Image 1 (tube, rainbow, N blue to C red):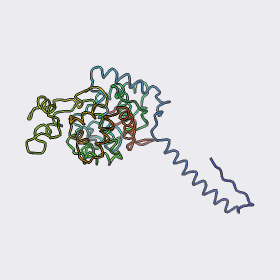
Image 2: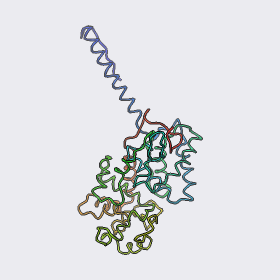
Image 3: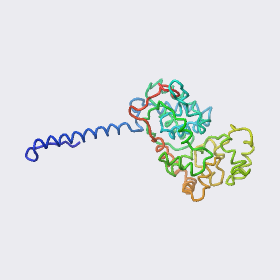
Image 4: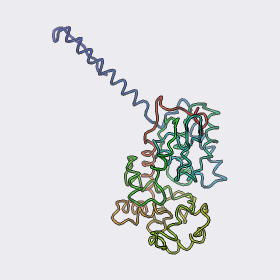
Length: 342
């Protein structure tokens, strides 16, 4: 750090005092800026306060996924839906709380099938070792990475240090989270609002390489896509017939179908080859490839041709998404229980 000295041979004492005062102001501003920098996310945030955080989360999710092969898809979806509403702050985990004016985001249309039950077990394990230290928002981010890796996907260094919100935003959840029935333009707009570009859109959509979707989210593609009683013309005819069997026209809203019919429980790049073959389950997925002139088509082709490129980009985009407006420093709180404020 530079220091300022004065000599009477160069400037007068009064000028020297003025210069010193100005320097002090600049120094103070610099220190304040450094303080803000220290509050940013870092993969080593818990190195001292909870050094075993990753191994604790790993132990819990390893056991949980033995009875739930879809756990990775459930957790990463919750992380995604959390970050798209006022940033990655754990708000999606909050239950209704009349006393504190909280209306849960999980009654929003995109969140009706969200399953965050495993988060409570992770939080309990962490509280027993590092009480009041690890945020629920960080649990979603870290568990997402660990579960993707366990299912055969990439690994990446997760920036940590998020704090939890004390509010939820139901209206924001309904407005900001992409729907399966959204067209390409609307999905792209919702990503752009969050500071995510077309490469992020395609890479993060690749998380649909595992997990399942309810019939209600894609039935329109099977029977009445454009209001004329016909199916979506971009849907592979063989897949169409198969889906009609598992998703009747007027019943079975909660019936489940694999997002990736080829390797439904593995994290790989088959999602993109499915899109190339018109076998994307959701409209929002297939339109990444089937929309004429869309810049996402070339990205789908690139990821279909190289799993390595997909994995590398997916990790980068997960970090970018995880950096959306986190609460840090003294903002928010570290919830003791993830479904309610302290």
